[in-house]
Image 1 (cartoon, one colour):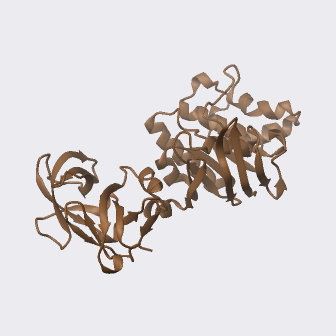
Image 2 (cartoon, helix red, strand yellow):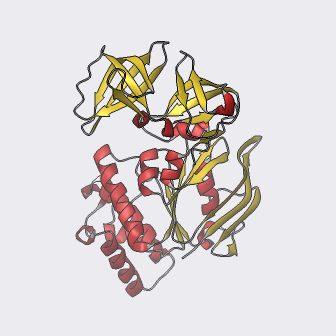
Image 3 (cartoon, one colour):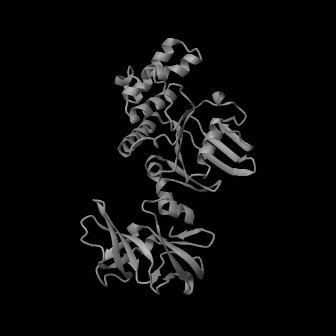
Length: 359
């Protein structure tokens, strides 16, 4: 079991700084996901941990040992890439054993490790097949098996599912979650897919513009985003954002641009102009006049997703937002609807992007 500690690390490519004074601890046995858009620095950070990119400043400690100056092979880590990179002329067994043979490990030990890894991944029946005889998901399992046989201190995954089709991605994601539960190993997983992050992570590290925006459990990041960026990036569909003014005593009411007023369930940040954020499930279709906080709107696109219905609405002032209705909703495009707001689900964001919400 191994913890990984980064302290004030930085990285530049020429004059371009890609990681800026970043500190992070990945606890032993934890699965941490680096989540962020392209260019946020998440893959570079993973490669710095692996030793594939140098660390310009700061320190890296792996299992209590300073490691920023160690070559990749001496860090005790195993990396699984987006590209499987399997040898086509070798069987699954031979692919998994190849790295161990290169370091002249005894054949008996190699055989035992390969069999153990195949059992963990439930792929014993695939050992004599070649890569051309495997599906994409099975090839990725072989790549993971090749990492397991090294018995590393920690596993690093660099967008390992991005080459798979949608159904395989879901299935392999479940397999990875089960693998972590069985092995209890330290894992760092890089992705831009927030569904992968939400379903796999013990904690999510949201990266943006060379720095960490937020670290938290999946539901902490989803329910209490630390910034406007996190609120907009995490969630599918994304959070609704509306212009609002807080201008009443105590900062307890937010007034929308059309004049409607929404009570706040938390002490407001003070008078001023803000963005009000609320997720689609926080806005429900209501009967006309139902409840104290409803707004009239016109339904546009209606997405029927089975267990729920998403309704793309336009308020009277032209503001567009997404509301949620029950799966058997009878709403149709063009219908006049009333929207009920769950005021406990409201967030406010100031000009700097800082978030305010109920604790």
